[in-house]
Length: 347
Image (cartoon, rainbow, N blue to C red; front, side, top):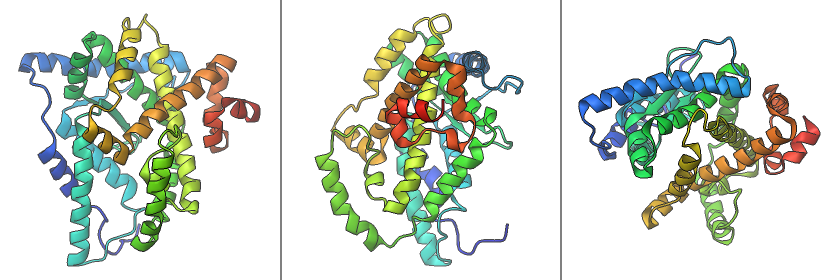
C-alpha cells in the first residue's frame, strides 16, 4: 500500500495515555486471589466456546483458542490498537505539520476520555482486527468482571463463564463465517470515507438533531446523537451497520442465556440482576451514556435478542444459521424489528 500523506486523524497513543490517566484501577484484590481468578477466566474462554459451538452448530473443526484476561490498562491498549487498525486508512488524513499534529492530539484526548469511561465498565470484548493473526483477539477484563459480580452478588464462576459465553459467540461469528470480517471492515470504511464534511454542514443539522432527540426521547430504535447527525447518504450505510451489530449482539445475548442452568446454574438470577444494572445510575452517567450511545447499545441487545429468539423459536437454530450465508441474507434494519419479514424473505 502506498504511503498516505499526512498523519492519522487521531493520535491513538495520546488516546491510550489519556484513558489510563482518568480511568480507575478497579477493585483491590489480593494477589493470590487475583491470579486464581485470571487462571480460571482463561480456562473459561475455552470452556465457553465449546458450549457455544454445541448450541449454535458453528465453528466445529476450528481450533479452540484461549482468550486473554487483562486489566483495564490492557483493555485500553488493545482497544486503541484495534481502532487504529480499523479506522486509520478509512478516515481522512490530517494535514501535515503542526496543525495536523495538534488536531490529531486533540482528537486523541477526546477519544481517550471516551475510553476511560468505557474502560471501567466493559466486561469483555472480541476484536476481529486485534492480535497477530486472522482469528482476532478475545479479551476478558478481569477487574470489571470481579467488580460487577460482587455488585450483583452472584456466583463468581457462573458470572465469569456467562461473560465468556457472550464474547466467545462473537469470536465464532467472525471465525466461522469467513466473509464477515471483511464485510464489516468494508462497511465501516465506507461510512468513514463519506464523513469528511465541513463543520458548517454538520452544524446545520445539529439543531434539528437535538430537536428530534427531545421530541423522540422514547424511540427505541435510536442510536443517539451520532445517527441524527448523519446525512442521508451516511444513514444508508449506518443502517446496514446498525442492523449487523444488532444481529451480532442479539445472537450473543441469546446464546449466553440459552445454554441454560446446566452450564450456568444461576443464569436466571444473573440475567435479572444484570438487566437492572445496565440502566444509568445518575444524571451524569445518564448524560454520558446518551452522548456515547450506550443506552442505544443496550436497546440493541434487547432488539437483537428478540429477533434471534423469534427466529430460532420459529424455525430452529439450523435454519436461523441461514443468516450467515452471505451479506444478502443478513437482516435489514426493518427486518430486525419485524423478524417475520426476514423469515418470509430468507428462511
